[in-house]
Image (tube, rainbow, N blue to C red; front, side, top):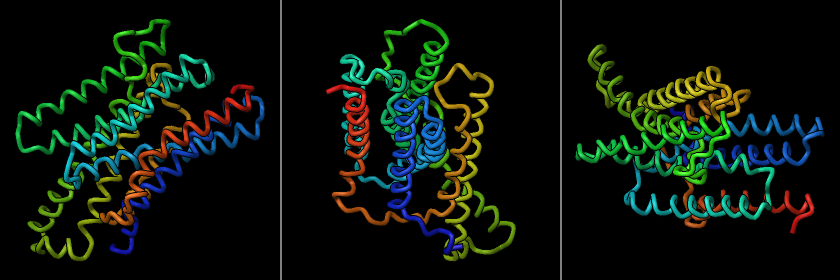
Length: 299
């Protein structure tokens, strides 16, 4: 079983970044070459791979909150990058530099998803029950974001008290995924306690032979499958009510293969990589946007 768990957090992050980049390149190809069938096909393939990125990033957030020594610094880094992304979205919209992507900007900043997921997990794991109760706040925010986008998508109404740059990208899906990944460790503990009681085999043996990691990873997979299936069900029942791409969203379940191989180890974590992984998102978005603008006669 130990042989299955060979991917550290470092490699999970690398896969998540690659899949995210492919997703955004796919959107770029679709906007830039709407009449080129070859590019449209390539765009669809890239966007299918892109579906795997959300569960992996949310998983990394859950792991990050479990292991961080300073939740304040952790949230501050996410907040700084998230603020930069929102500012860039606003600038592109009001300067009309990237008009074709305006609908994309208006349907969420993924860093708001990451921040609220981290806050939710931090609150739920806190020993003070008053802090645990605060878990309801990010959950409520995610539901409001979901409802507001649904109203704006299905009508000409624009809800000004909840501006688009405050929207989450995947709303309640992100938070439920994060909570599920966090509780997977507790689910694994309960399951091994049950096996210990039924078989008489000490729990420590399961831990030593890698069974605990394998069982925990199985719960990661179960959580991922259940939440992504629930998301797809929402899309099926309300196809025009959300911004999620109904045709390919279910492919996010394929990220389960990587979660199953998680080793529980951090892996490579040099300072330059930590900083680079935070800055990569706004930088690669900016590069793609500039290329799009230049190709369409801007700048």
